[in-house]
Amino acid sequence: MADLLYFASLAETLEMKSERLELPADCNSVEALVALLRSRGEPFAGAFDGSTRILVAINQEMSEPSAEISDRDEIAFFPPVTGG
Image 1: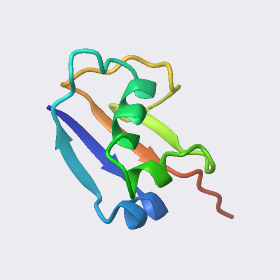
Image 2 (image 1 turned 90 degrees about the vertical axis):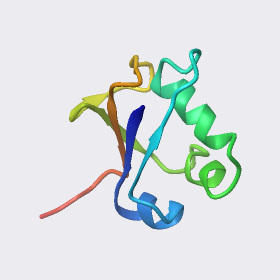
Image 3 (image 1 turned 180 degrees about the horizontal axis):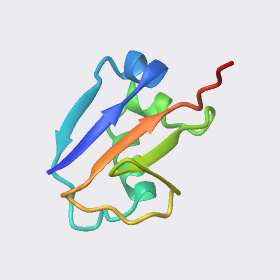
Image 4 (image 1 turned 60 degrees about the vertical axis):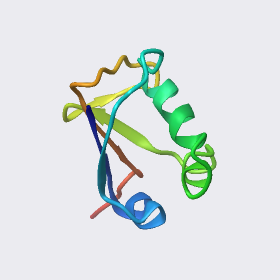
């Protein structure tokens, strides 16, 4: 099972910080995972609708939407963070 982590405003919107998810065989990229999450309906559909940029890290390494994933990965989603 993949470990999904949600941070900052994304965690607030989804009302969860993490979950474990068994990925279907055809869910092998971040893009496919986002599509799967959106198919759950609200609040996932709104959170991942593309209107707000969401960054992703796979196993604590920044990744692109086309990056491959597996059931053994930790996949973290978070909004860009600025600081001073």
